[in-house]
Length: 382
Image (cartoon, rainbow, N blue to C red):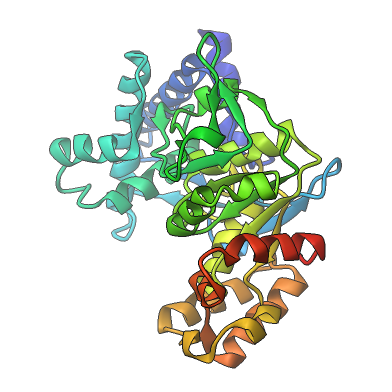
């Protein structure tokens, strides 16, 4: 135990560790025990004090981008800057207590060899400490705090992703010792992506596809699956039904690793939110900067884009909302945004309008497949 505790203490002092490790339960329990022992040691010292909790700073000012050496994949990561949660400061006192509460819960989950979703953890904390956990958002942020403190993945904490994602098309999935799932025969609903990242990691994958198509919207995914577009364009379809969850991002990353020659193409609305969704798949997010490298993929922007406006009827153009402009401002301030994406965003803001994928139905309900095929033939993606 002494050696394990000694090795676990490194995460408090080594400021070069700016990523989240995937660690066994015994190591995570040891890291939590070290945090408790350090807290008690300072509290029981001749000059007792309540020690602050040092967390990797997740603000945009601490965000950097890194490009892989072996692949054209850039991702968000967090630099060597720390912030603290302190019981002695009014604005962080509750956050300080929440971190300890979540660590206590995670320790119990790991001892029982269980896994819980963020939603399950919220209800347990709501019953246990209602004064500190009044919303799911507070639980999610505190989990990120614990990841930033212990520098381990949330999956290592026993927290399982809640998945909304679906996959369809020319992909065969097989869990060890289980039957093969043919995703081309799953109908318009597709195959549900498991939230258990360990199951996703152990999947046996086979495909004869030539493309992976990431679809922003569930309804568009259903249309493409119903039309069996993956037969006309040999492809795998994947959607997170909006903003991407961890499990969907993890599976996409697994597909990218398993089939590195397949282009990954994104079909999103032409608006700031659509671009933000694409960028999350492509680069990761600041909030999960310690884990972004584990999910980043070299996603290309297929559509919709500014050069598609000429085929969109004027009646389908919708004014940008204040929320759109807020997202656009956030994207513009990010150093991760590549120049051609920045130009597209500038065009959106200058036009003051947005276009949804469904606007292409002006040309017929079967036009989506033709649109994708045309873009691919022209290699018209960025």
